[in-house]
Length: 384
Image (cartoon, rainbow, N blue to C red):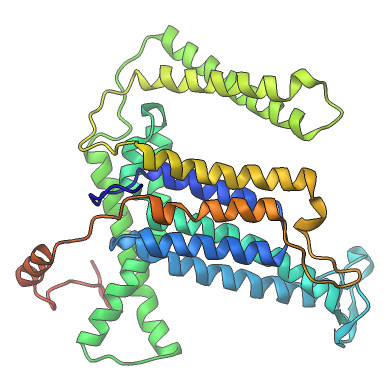
C-alpha cells in the first residue's frame, strides 16, 4: 500500500521501471501491445508526476514520438522498400544511377509495407515515451546525488544533458507567459521566429547554471589515491566491461559455449560493481536529505523488471503474437503474458506515494515576493 505521507520516489526506481518498459517494447511491433504500453506509461506519469519543471517535459517527448512516426512514414514513401499486394498510393518510380543500385525514389506505396513502417515507428516512439516518463518522474538532481561516487564525472555530464528537455519545457512556458504579459499575441511562423532564440538562450543559460552550481559544490572532485588503488580500480572496471560484453555476446549467440553466456556476464557485473566500489572510496562527499529506498521503490523497479521478463518469455513461448500478420493482413493477436506484464507496469501509479505538492501559502508567498511581472526572460535581440 502506498504511504499516506507524500514524498518523492527514489529516481533510480523510476529509471529502472522505465528501462524495463523500454526493453519490453523493443521486443514487439504489435500495435495493440505498443498502444497498451504507451497507455501504461501515460497513466503512471499523469498519476505521479509533480509540479516541477522537469515534469512538464513529458509532452515534448510525446510530440517527438509522433514526429518520429510521421518521419518514418515519409521515409518509407520516399526510399522505403515497397512490398505487398494492396496499392494505396500509386506513385512514379525514379531510378537512381548505378552507384546507388537497389535504391529507388517513390514508387507505388503498398499497404503491407506501409503498415510495417508505421509499426516500426510506433515502437521507437513508445521507447522514447518511456524515456520521457523517466525524465518527468525522476528528479535529475536527486538522481545525481544517488549515483556512486565513481560515476560523479560522467554522472554530472549526463544529468546536465538530460535536464535540457525539462529546461526547454520550462523556458517555453516562461517565454510564452512573458509574451502574453507584453501583449504579444503573434502566432504561426512569426511567433516561432520571436520565441525560438529566447527559448534556446534561456535553456542554455539555465543548464549552464546547473553545471556551474554542481561544480561549485564539489561534484566530481576526487581525493588523492595511491597508484596501486588506481591500477586496481582500472583493472576491475576493465574486467567488468569485458565480462559484460563477452557474456552478452554469448547470450545472443546460440552457437557459443555455455560458459561464455550467463556465467561470464555475472562475473562481469561482479567485477564492475567492485570497480565502482573501489573508485568510490576516492570521493569524499555528503548527501543532503538522501532519497530513501523503501518498499514502494522496490515494487516500482520490480514492475519494470516483470514487464521486461514477460516480453522475453513471450518471445520464447509465443513469438507469433509479438507481430501483426501482414501477409496476408489479419487482426493483431494479443500476447496474454506480455499484456499481463504491462498491466503490472501500471501499478506504480497506484502503489507509490503521491509526490509532494507546493503548499498554497508558500506559492502565494513566492508570487507576492517576486510579483507576476518581475521575471526576467530573454527576448529577441537581447544580450545577457
